[in-house]
Image (cartoon, rainbow, N blue to C red):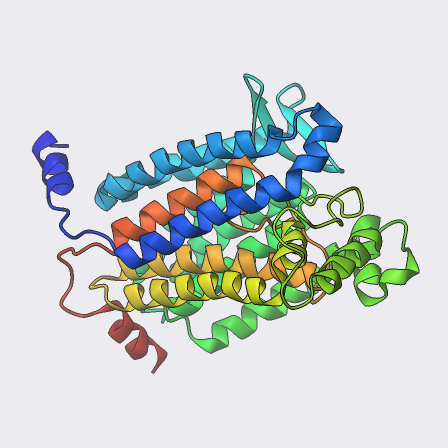
Length: 389
């Protein structure tokens, strides 16, 4: 690749990103760090005798994530597409390392992490962004023509299935299902006819239901969702604790740092159930503001997608936006008791380096793909409308 080409891409950046969207993302990151400090200090004090343990690690990962976000913003998308086979195969190999003793780590029955030099990493988080890039690339080449479904949908469906199976074997059912629904959302945006969705659902839904009932803890989560008091000291404990935190917050909340449910009464308050701490301390109106930030991110992302002049950028922005917002919706729904408990983190908020870094990389790709670029004279949305006819 010519060096001049890369320099040209960097220099031609004015204005290359949406400043309002950037402000919202930075606000989410800052708010997430602040609420994590409030949610995690008690547990960090108990476990490590250091109340700042979780938040300091999160700040470190925010720094790493911002660096990778800047790199994702600068890298030419043509280079990303050329390196896609390496990204896909490399991500699969990293995911398979979770089954290798001595490298992998098990936590709460799931084998999702690999540990290198005492640093843990969750490959399934990387799958989320690599899968979006791959689907945007492969579906963009079809350009809305799905008249030969085996040829146009076969390869992406196979890659999605392989990633989903690997993640499922890690005992991470919720993330596997998330990858499938994220892929279906991108298929829909790419203009896949409804008849093909019917065929996919006929195949996927029965298999998903059968797999749901193959593990006892999944069945217990369903029962606890339907009746949390069935096992109040076991599988229903988190659901009931989150509900009490939501009720205690009321309209205005107890105030930042003044919540009490995080002090032993709410498991995983620093990660999967951090939204319950937000609801308790900021109250209903604080929750509305936080949700509004995610809604704004979604609307802005979809608006930027519709402005693009080629399929790849359109689908990449759409996929990144859906991935971030869907995770937030699922996590909030779990805490609110609207869906059974999952292991899906709350983007920008939940403690965890893998999630934070990957989320910020997605934001970098969002800024990159939405920047002005030469493309086809026919816009992605117009092609999408033609594909639906």
